[in-house]
Length: 132
Length: 408
Image 1 (tube, rainbow over the protein chains, first blue to last red):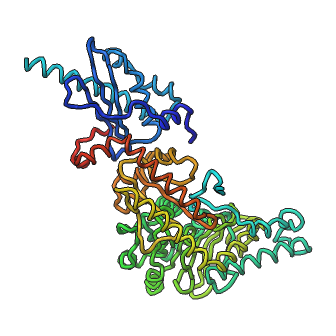
Image 2: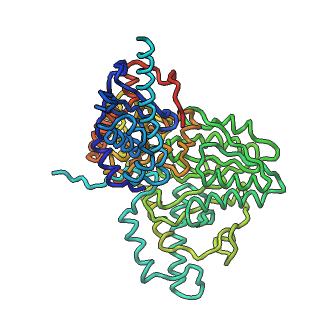
């Protein structure tokens, strides 16, 4: 199977690889997938004033398309508000990276990772509000 | 100055290049010596027939058959396997309807068995141990009075495990059951002797041994016992009525030459390839933690190295080393999106199956290539581990098996 140039570019130079402090209340962490399925994505966001995503980091175990999907996702959500980031759909990733049908699940996983990170952030904020 | 040429081929289990000595011998049979080997009444036919008979003799010697008449030419090992299993099943169906094979066989065996099951045959798929070995005792235990055939491969195409055909052959002979072996991957790379091993039928193909694609053979024993089978293709009754169709004369000539070279260079070639394989293994496994060999280290094809690199997905690694042609047991590289059934049968977990790479070394692999590939693999595995959340969790001491993963 031939890969699109964008997938190759992202896998050779993945953006925003790394780890944020998951104990930080302004950080939301999404961990989706399973090793037995061949892909695991961890996407983290650091949310600042006005709900703007100031930083995003990822690490992915998976094929080139999975790495590229998560790399692209971090690039896209940085600077967006969490409400805006939530509207990103897997088809947007499919179109941008020209993913073939067998790789669509990689984009689904990336969408899930964004949503999961946002949900984690919101849960942390809600828990803090309650504690106060 | 480097003499490396890219891409580097390290996938010798999939196919092999035609040896120049083989090609040279084939060439006249495309142009000047183009006759049909079945033309009995003119010189063109005689020349072609003579060339095919010479190839038959070389192939018989290659596997230590008693006679060149025991070699039936086919289009390749898949056809040979189909002809052996279906042909035997059809001929001996009044004697019994039970066939024994193993779970790690090639699809050309397994899918043929599935077809036979639909037609009323019963098939026992023997399990293998962690190294991929079929124990002779399990063969003995599976034989019933309905068993007509046991089919066990010489060596596995993914993990390179060599089966104990000598012991299995003793059992099948004692029980009066026929033994077929898919020798495609193993022949010429590990000793294979149809007489010493009591093998009654054997499949193999030219393109796995530096011959051309599109030509294979089925060895069919003619003496003690005389094996009979029903042809699966109707036509001119070529190949003693077992396989109709005009012979692929240039291919057969190349197959014969390829076998002659394999026979002559057996010790030298395999020792060299084994040395390179061990060099590759040592370099990679010394430099990288959490790498695991799949298969056996004692009964293994010299050119096979199948390694799982924990925390790294196989297809991503293949992409990262794109100048090197290898193969992976990862689901992402298969049409079915299932990880390798062979690795599963060995008890390799799905995680490690997704992380496996098969390196196949062969006659034209060089030390320089091995060193280059080792360095490249080490660098890229490290890079991909830096991107892997699993590696980070491992480093933090988290037991990945204890995590409640959300499968999708």
